[in-house]
Length: 352
Length: 278
Image (cartoon, rainbow over all chains, first blue to last red; front, side, top):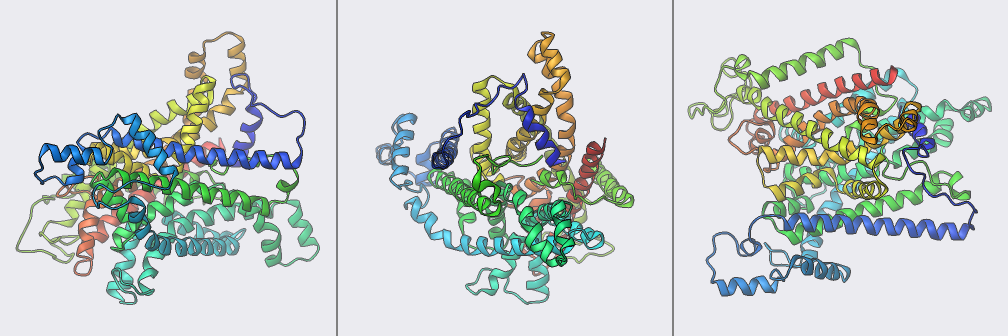
C-alpha cells in the first residue's frame, strides 16, 4: 500500500488544484547539482533547527509566572530591588523580541545561556549529562539494528517463522517502553539476580536499559527491513541470481538486502524520536542519570534555558542523523550517483 | 509512530480468533471505563493499613499496593483515564491534523509552504519531547495531558492527510468539479474530505493505542494524571518503587496498558487491511 500510494501521489502533484513545482529545464552540471543539493540540504537543516528553537522560545515565553520566581525558588523572600537585579542580569527586563534576538546571537556563538534552576551554563549542564545518555543510546541503536537485520533476513519469505517475528514486532511496538523496563528489572534483576537493578558504574548495569531501549526500535525496523527484502525477492534480478546458482544467503545479503535498506532510512524521524524519547523513560525506570532526567527536571521546574538547549540539541541530532543517512543513501543506491533525481520522498517522508 | 507499521504490506494477517480476542478485550476495557463498578466492586482508593502488599489471591485478585488498596479495582478504574484521554486526544489530533493536512495540500501557496515547513520542523522533535514541551507550557493535569498528547500526534496525522489529499485532488471528479466552477471549499467538503478521512480512520485507530501509551508515559513521568488517582501510568510509577517487594503492583497495570494497546493495534490493522483490499 505505501509504495503504490507514494507512486500514485507523485505524478498527481501536477494536478490542477495543486500548483506544479518549478522544474529545471536545462540539465545543470554535476558539480553545480552537487553544490545545490548540499546547499539546499544545509539550508533546510538550519531552518529546521532555527524553527524548532524559535517555536520553543515563543512557547516557553507564553508560560504564565515570573521567571525570577523559578530562578530564586518558590519559597524564598527577596527584596524587589534584588529581584530587579536578577531580572536584568538574565536580560528578562527587555522586550521579548530583544530577548529573542540576543538569544539567537548568543546561540550562534555557542552560548546557550544559564540554567535558572542550577545557576550553571546550560552547555555545562547538558555536557555533563550527555555521556550517560550516549552510552545508553548508541549501544541500544546498534543492538536494535542487529536484531532487526537478523530477524528480517532469517524470516523473509518464510511464512512460519515470519509470523513469529511479526508477533514479536507487534508486541515490541505496542508495549510501553517503561513497562518493558519494569518487566526486565523484575525478571532479570530481582528474580534471577543476573544484573544489578539500579544505576551503578558497571557495564552490567547497562544491559537491561540498553535492551529496553532497543526492543521497540528493533520491532519496527525489522518489519520495514523484511518488507524491503521481500519486495526485492520478488524482483526479476533475484530470479536471475538464483538461476545463476546463487545460494539463498548470497541472494539475501548481496542482492536483496541493499534494497531493503532504502525504505528503512526513510524512518529517520521515527528512530531518532523513539531513541531520544525512549531514553527519557528508560532513564527514569532504571534511575540512571542522563539527558532524559535533565529534560524532565527542566520541564518540571520550568527551567527555560535548559529546555531550549535540549530542543536545539535534539533538532541538531535529528539533522545530523538525517544527513548521514542521506549520504548513506547514495552509497547504498548506485542510481543516485549518476543522476540528480531526488530519491522518492525526503528522508523524513513517512509512508502512510 | 505505529501508523507506519500498519501501513506495511507485510503486516501479518491476524487470524479470526485473534481478531475476536482483540475485540473482546477492547469491549472489556470500554466497559471498565464506562462502568468500572460492574467489574470491580472494591473501592480503588480505599486504603487498608492492615493489609499492605497482600499477594494476589482470592481476597484481592491482583493483590494490594503499599497502602493496602486493591490493585484489581485500581486497574479497572484506571481504564477510564487511559481510554478517555487516549480517544479524546486522538479525536482532537484527527480534527486538527485533517485541517492542517488539507490546507497543506490544497491551500494557497504561502499557506502550503509554511505548513509544510512547520510540519517538517515539528517532525524534528521527538514525539515525547513535543508532548513534554506542551506540558511545560500548559502545566500537568488530565486535560492538559489530552491536549499535549494530541498536539504530539498532529504533525503525523497532517502528513497522512496531505499525502491522501494530493492524489484525490488529481482525480477526475475533482478536475471536473473545478472545471464546473464548484467553489473550492465545497470541493474539499464534498470530494476531498470523504476520500481522505477514510484511510485516516484506520491510522487513527492505531493512533489511539499510541495515545494510550503516551498518556501512561506522561503519568509515569509524573506530568500527567496525578496520584492518588488510579491511572495506569501512575500505578506503574508507584509500583516501580516496590518492584523488589511486590511485583504485582506494577506488573498488572502494565499488562492492562499492553493488552489494550495490542488489541487496539490489531483491530486498527485489520481495518487498514480491509481498506486497502477494497
